[in-house]
Length: 512
Image (tube, rainbow, N blue to C red):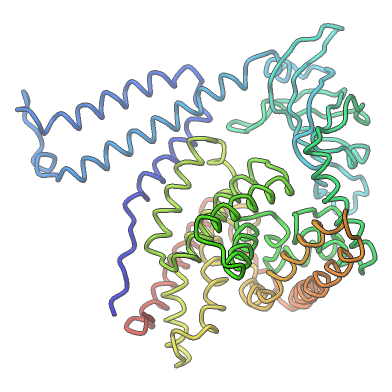
């Protein structure tokens, strides 16, 4: 049986929207309206040209172009204009107020705002430095300088010491610090380097306090676990990496396992798949299953906090669940492209996010490459191309091959054992995530059940930690590789060659 043709029609529009978003977050806000007008004018010309006799000669290639191709051109123009206009309008709102000017002057100010992220410990650039630094996102609504308060609405990145490690998500706080300029295209208006602890003005809202009960409950019921599991259980379940030992963190980075403790599309896919299985076992009709899934996804977003990266992960997870339900990569690709288009128009700063880039390329790699890689690997070892073993190896291989050129932009080194590490830990990922989430849900109401579930998740994370430490200790766990710009290009070309070679091996052995 001939495999279905993958629908790639939305891919050019998604890539163009990505490029337009990258430009849009760097353009002056005043360029949005002219861009929209220019795109609209070109679109009108493209649509109208075939329906009337041109006053001037038209290129033969254009007059012969089918209406469908012209429609693609119009779509690309429209999404690019939408991305630039969205970026420009959001930047106009974001930059209103004095914070950008104060940051340019390096002013010392007092700000009031709402904590918009959990405190994240920064890795020190100096290995022997014992000083801990944290980063916190703050939605600033008031800035005070020289006893004069001025209302604003600006996202600011706070860099602080250990006094900020316990700041509560959703709390309203006051902080004193020095403003510094953010980078071009950054989501935040400025960086605030604070000089002391925050002053709490009001606690989080009721919803945030309720979510906090579950998060703190998971930390409490996992307290009795050994250090590795004590850190990994909250990490695998809700993305809380605050208790992961530093040496384990380094080992996981060396073998490409840090994605397991970052809330990603895989988390939402696992949770969504579990909910669908339970709904099917309960005999719920299709509409009720969809409603149950939507409620579960919304609840999980609240549990891990609705930050931009989490909302992006939820969207990618929705694509993953769709691929599981449909079982057809031909449908998953347009779904992924449409998701990318929607996310970039709503949040153009995602175009500059390495996390978003990794999420998209990993999802695309899994959707597009898993099947042909499984067939090629099966042909190489003379096995059945439809065997589960081939797909178990092909999924992490596809993700690793797709993400490799992006990863070397961050760290110019290749994780030699990333694929075997991900293959080995694959059976433990779903139990660690599901049992950890269930432990968080049970902890506030039934601590004993929460502890039991946390210990179950602990067994799964013990295996993850063991694999990470074992493989990271082997020779050549990381191989140096050239950095940008030529390193990623060289790796991309090499990866394409490997993929083509493996796919050619499996040609004719692709399972139906």
